[in-house]
Length: 420
Image (cartoon, rainbow, N blue to C red):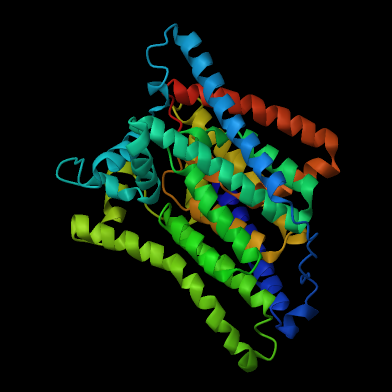
């Protein structure tokens, strides 16, 4: 059964990637691919540009929502354990401790058996918290505040982005589903989800509006927040090629490449991280060794990860059955379905981002954080909003289920459950 699922998922992935490549080339001016029945032009954008006041209202609502989740989660947790003694420390779970260590003293602040193990965590998020802590005086609170405000700002960029391509209603529903996704409570935790969401969303927005300089700046920030941020250079390349129709009369259009040079700021973020690794450990790639040694993580074909998740699903008494195996299977399936829908309803930049982020996160040997990572797949929530708007009953049921599971996982996280 596992082999069948691996084979089927591999074939589906090849088809998905193949069709996407055809569409990207066709929309970039490669005329031969436009004759393919699989080719589809990019849908025309709605062109809605919301006023600043409207965007600020969205950001304020997102910030209030994060505060409400914090208050509700803390209150329910303290009632459950019958004590208010650790009301704040209940949010100090798992890797939050590592971000606190980096924010307090950098990568050399903490060691395990002579290894500077925290170098596997990228620096931008703890650096922001360290700067804020000058005024706050409590590092955990500073980490949480950076997450709160990053999420609010990210929602502002996403609202602008989705309004431009799909209009206000789809933008609002997309943000609603993003906020109640079962693992989106991490946007208000002391981890780097919100910061990455902000940087990647802003990069996508400015890429879509063809402001290559600001796309490069925010992409640089994304690459300094999470290793996958460097792949925003690929999505920028896709949009660049399609906007300038780079394969149409190719030699004459080479002059446009100069405009793309700002996008090289994105991989520069990765270079800065590698230099930091070298300065701390003497090896720019030492984070790969440390990830495998302390977190059992290495890259592998995503079909192998499918096998890992299915294997854990067969063990209901497993400690990760509820936190990794069951949500992993559901998210893999839902991700595949929404990616194929994205082929028909979204501009190529969104589908390419979806594919990269989906498969790269499914290429980890121990996908314990699959739910947390999937919370940043923005195109998945846009497709969900499209489904919900077309089939209202389905949207209402899905929203109720997501909200209920969101609350369940939030309380499980605050109780120290194996959800990270």
